[in-house]
Image (cartoon, rainbow, N blue to C red; front, top):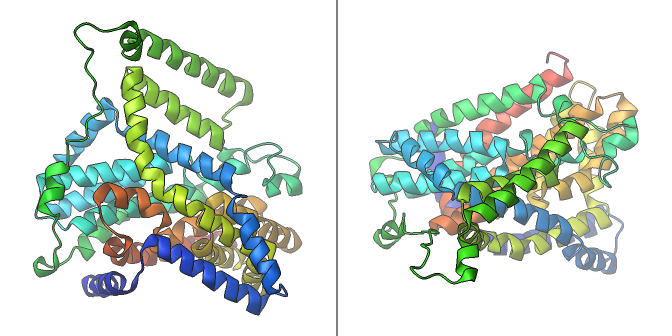
Length: 451
């Protein structure tokens, strides 16, 4: 039954899901229509809100691009590559390979979403190279499925924002008067247990939905030949110039890396475990610099990694425009209030999770969604006497959940694999269903104070 359901969604997505760029444009049109119907905003207000939002998200977009690029650069280091090759050797059958990809992608996405996306993709490509008869779209879908736990992890936008003092979007601080360290959000049992459960069961889901032999879609021969040929290694010329010696200098690179380590030591020793968005970017940047050894290698890694950010750079302004409509016209507030209206203290968390899932389809940026939904959720939590920290994490859960049917964050993986969103979204819809069931149950358990 599960295999047939996966086959149905795969057929549906491959035939009816538009390209990710067109998907964003169609969502823009839908947002305009919904705003005109459900808010008091006129057409001029909708259009100006859209226009204002397009480039109002540039600063945050750049942070997201840096997370992706620094995570990708770290994944391209020789040390990480050797680990991936070793892990890939365990996937001696297509099904086993897909299960391994889903597990590794889940663990790495929990550590850092950009790192997880790229590590999952590179591991999937290596396993496909070893098993060319494997279902290629499923392998990439397995890599993207691991992304479903990212907002419960170390690089989650919302837990990092509420851990940052005087941040413009720290709505929890405005209510409680203090920041929320990640020990009270990410590392709480109510958040860790479902994240671990999803990571551990994703491989089983991949096993259950692996297509029948006649439905397997293998990697094109020309694409197979390209795997493993993307090298960032540079040899020092026989008679190098001074500039070339500097480009290849381990000493300069390590002194620079040491400077970064000293800063991180000072940061954590003086501020405690203050893990915010900028620090996460900095950690992966310095780790990549050190592990690449030479400055020229890191430069080449960045040149490679930045290609995967092209789709995000193109589409982020579009989603910024949608975010502008959602916030500027009050549409996000209307949608969030629908769920608040039917909530009780016991069901509040679950309904906020569902509301966040719906809003995420229109605003796939975690920070952007928090800006739209955070104030409503926090005000409702305050009025109902609900824990604001857990309420904030419900928004984080919903944001990560519907990414499985929102192709925006799949763009780096799709670019790496040469596939379109419609090739993988049928499989990731099954991840949506399973993770949604797990998180809904835990949201109810939180509401009934079981956990």
